[in-house]
Structure formats: structure tokens, C-alpha cells
Image 1 (cartoon, rainbow, N blue to C red):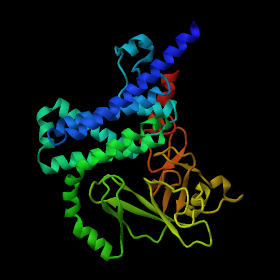
Image 2 (image 1 turned 135 degrees about the horizontal axis):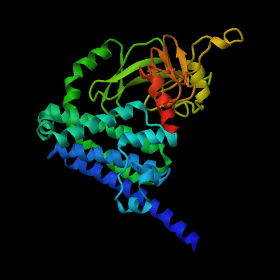
Image 3 (image 1 turned 60 degrees about the vertical axis):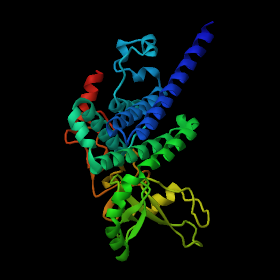
Image 4 (image 1 turned 180 degrees about the vertical axis):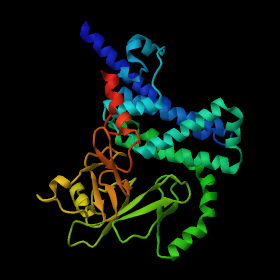
Length: 364
């Protein structure tokens, strides 16, 4: 009898996960479909979809993690919909701390931007309406939603829990083409700038967010070059170029920080291993017995890649997510060196790798 009860509860949780996910896709579909008639409600529904996807992934760890205060509620009230649940920021933080599931910093930033835009439209009605007025206002919303969908699509592809929703993902990707006419104006406005960049020997590649050939790759003698989209302004990353591991192949393999390392050379199909790419990018001083204690391993605060950062000439690059920075910082609490900067009060609030003194005090 007890066994039957447990099976029933498991099925209920599976059904709730499916319900949350399908609702998220429904809100996305509505956001796209109603954009031309109401950019305001399109923004609101897009933000709700993001929240539901995050909650669905969090619930895969345990249903109680969705509760704002798990010790003040019950499973019965949760399944009835009577319990207060976590915010998107709380869901992201619990995924990081409890499940070790990382939402990259650029993705968190665009999710926050859409949420802030949504809150403005809900609580400050006139300001929200003004924000969506005119071509420029609508274009900004389109840029946000294209960036938001790129982030969601990337996460859903990485999270195996959503492998059964490939048709829904494809359907939303097709629907996003409705936004192309709005971005076309921005693309045409940048035509001369892109033409000059090419004339000067620069490279232009396709943006993974807006799908226009609008990403200008900066000149670089190194294997890492800055790459920024001139249309949607979301893609701010790097293009990596690595020689094929096969000495008999002359192919130079290009990929962006959003696409990540390809599994093999497109020319000869030789496997492009993570170790080879790391060694290729690492131009730092060789570690020896003499300098071992001076060497500081660096982790990535964007993807939390543990000791994944290498020195590449005058910059640092993560060999897992390929985020780059000109410097690294050290947390005042856990002493973890990490790409870019840490919070000014890291001794108290912590960093991506610890909760600081504040977190330890709250646990006592």
C-alpha cells in the first residue's frame, strides 16, 4: 500500500513538471503572437515564461525547493497552488547552491532586464506604455526577447530534463522569425559600418541571437578576438580560432563563445579535445617546481568552471565557456581566484563559489 502511494506522488511531480513546462511554452507563444497588438502584454508573458522554465528545472531537484519558505508550508498546499513560490532570482540561486546548475551571468543579466521591463509595465502603466511606443521602443523589446530566447534555448538544450520538448523548442524558434522585420531596420542602418569593417580586412559572422550577418570580429593576432553584434547588441563575446589537432590538416577552426568548442574539425573530422584547446590557448608561464607556490589557479565566475581559466597573452580566457577578461580577482572570504571582478564586499556577501560570512552566520 505504501509503495502505491509513493508511485502516485512521483507521477504527480512529473505531471507538475510537464504542466509548468508546457505553460512556459504557451506563454512564449502568446508573447510572440501578441507583440504587434500589445508589446506590453508580450513583455509580461515573456517574463512569465522565463520564470516557469526556471521553476520547472528547479522542481526536478525537489518540489520543496520551489517554496519561498519550505518550513512554512506543506506538500498538500503546494500541489493545490496555495503556497508562495520562489522568484526567478531565487530559483537561479537555489539551482547554483543546491543543484550546482549554473545559469551563466550573461543569461542572468538578460533575464533580469526582461523582468525589470515587465515590472515597469505592470506597476507603472503609463511608463510601460511609453516604453513600447514607436519603432525604437518596440525594437528594444524585440532585441530583449531575441536575446532571452537565445539564452533559454541554450539552457533547454543543455538540460536533459527538457529533451522531450524538442518539437516545442523548434516551434518557438520558427515563431521568432516574426521579429525579423523589426531587426531588419537596424541591420540596414548598420550596412555602411559593416561594409567598412569588411573593406579594412575585418570579418563579419552571423549572430547566434538575431541571425543577421552582423557580428564584427575585431582584428587580432591572437587566438581570441572580441566579437560584438551591431544589430541586437546582445552578443558580446569572443571568437576563438584554433588550428586542427591533425598535423596533416591546415584547417583553422573558428567558433564563438556562445557556440562553444565543436566536437571535431569540419574538414577532416579529427576530434577537437578539451585538453587540446586548453593547451592551445594557454600561453602563460609554464609551472615548475620553482614557481609552483607562486602559481594561482583561476576559476570562472560566469560558468563556475573550476580552475578552467588560462592566461592567453594579455588576457584571461575560460576554456569551458570562453568568457574573457583582462584581469582576475580574488574573493576576500574563500580566496578563490576568478575571472573578472568579485563583489566589493565579497568578504561578507561571498562570490559565485561561496556565501561569505553572511551565509555562514545564517547557517549557524
